[in-house]
Structures are given as C-alpha cells and as structure tokens.
Amino acid sequence: MALNLFHYFFIFYRTDIFCFVGNMYVGIATIFVVTCMAVYLHKREYSETN
Image (cartoon, rainbow, N blue to C red; front, side):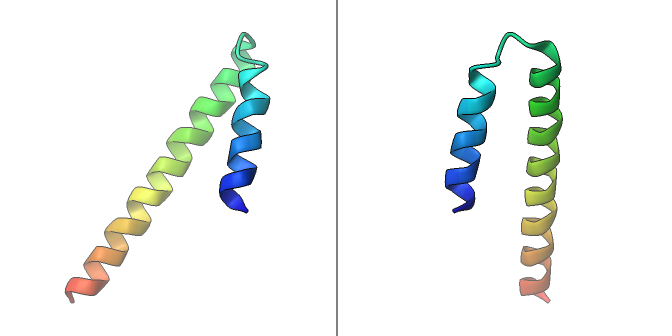
C-alpha cells in the first residue's frame, strides 16, 4: 500500500519535473524519509544488540 502510494507520488512529480518548487519539495521529502529510515534502523539495531 505504502509502496503503491509512493509509486503514484513519484509519477505525479515526474510529470511536474520541470517545476522547481515541486523538485524542491521532493528533495526535502526524500531527505526526510531517508533520515527517518536511517534513525529507525539505527535504533532497531541498537535495541537488538542490548
């Protein structure tokens, strides 16, 4: 479900790829998601080791 939503989100922004504001928001959202995933994985690994 989430992957499907992301797929449609990506296609939606690809059609709007020449819009600077759209690309800026995609960049911010991508950085935010990657950071959240990294923190989540790091916390999960840390809790497993202890």
